[in-house]
Amino acid sequence: MLYTSISQDIFFKAQDCGLKTCGIGYTTGMKTALIIPARYGSSRFPGKPLAMLAGKTMLERVLDVARSASAGRDDIDILVATEDQRIFDHAESLGAQAVMTPDSCQTGTDRAFAALEQAGITPDVVLNLQGDAPLTPPHFIRAMITAFEQTPMPDVVTPAVRLDWAQLDDLRRSKLTTPFSGTSVTVADDGYALWFSKNIIPAIRDEDKLRAADNLSPVLRHIGLYAYKFSALKAYVTLPQSRYEKLEGLEQLRLLENGYRVKVVVLEADGTPIHGGIDSPEDLAAAEALLRAEQK
Image (cartoon, rainbow, N blue to C red; front, side):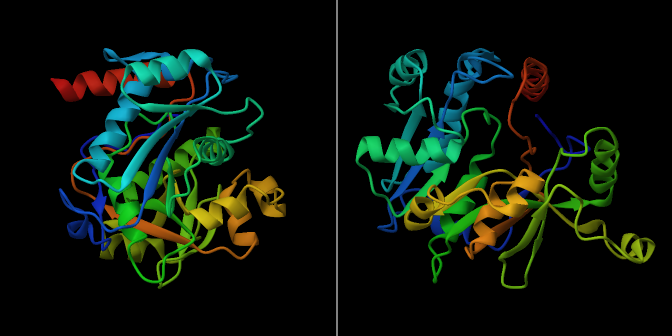
């Protein structure tokens, strides 16, 4: 499902994530694999990685994001993981390394790990950039990678956006008709996730006073990108679905329920609109309209 902020004039930037250490030409010695799972056999939108979006295929746009995020660094490898020869051939025609993975992979995370096994790659960090997320801001990816350059290295990193009150009101309205759209996260003082939920968390007492005091609400909306320490990813794909993962439909809860710590990179306004993945032809049309508007 494609989502945007309540206003296209609201944008986000990385907060307190040390992006200055990740500049052009910078390298840390930490090897990162940026995996793009691109599945042809989507039940809701078959063949969507090959669908055209404002003059380019969706996969080409996702590759553009990955290449922009890794520009100037020699410690990031980009790999397209697919189960379909058409996508494999298209990725190679775009100059990307592609790997065939089993059709049996249940999630993009499973496919990302299968791609690493097929390619014989053992990186320090694995970043999963879904092949249906062509509007992902490159600085989100850079912020996530930079978080792994801290000590101690986290198990998993994911981004979130602090909603202003208008955006929170919009999310509440959307929950009335699509209650499982949009995920929120609560975060401890040390920057690690306490919990993720399809309900809006936290509940807010004395909201009027908080609205008067600050334009930003206390609600963090989770952005569905993940980067894993390789050992955490290797362990994750062996774990069975957890109790609350099945109840909420959130695979990241499997991590928390098994004792893994998820570092949340909080982002603030700076000039890049926030979008989610494209799950349907309607989402594709909406994304195309946004891109056309931005090009004017």
